Image 1 (tube, one colour):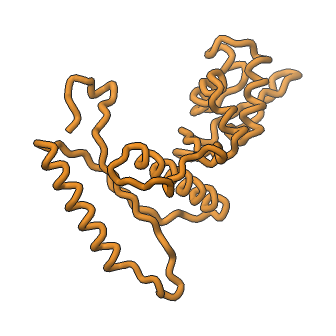
Image 2 (cartoon, one colour):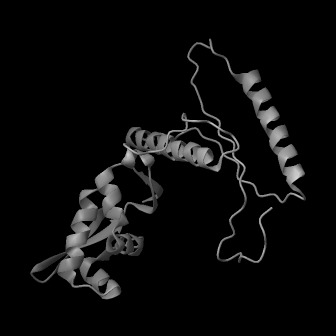
Image 3 (cartoon, helix red, strand yellow):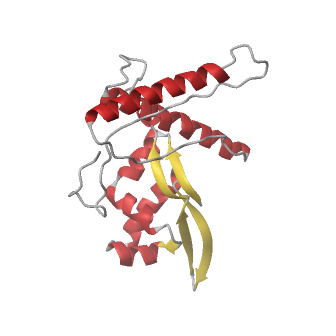
Length: 203
């Protein structure tokens, strides 16, 4: 089982978004049969089997083992990942285009860039899994609190200048055998989780 899988196929995305199938996916973080799931989700075993076939067809669950019980063979299934992300590639006709009206101060442009990041990294993960290789990536996730809007603006300008300087230092257009990489740096207000509560304002 993978920690996370990116769904690129529209039909698989549709299957995963069905409320009943999403519940079954969550339950199948641990192996279970249709009979076991039926008791948990309150559905008839035949109905559960119907949804399991759809999930299996799209590669969202897989057969863990088969158990023989009298004249019946019980199929024990398991989710192929602990969690799933739907790639914008699944909505190819209407996926965001970060090349349209780029504006580093626009939240919607940031969202378009983030969507492309999900799509690109998802495609890389899919290809790497097929080739049984790892993807060379790097990420930083930090949280900071600004004393003022002026400090936030100054930080953003300094961050942009630093990244621009690093890109200029290491980018080599003519390097033989070089491989292009994409650098994405984002700054946005922190969204408190339910555990953190909503009483504290984001910096």
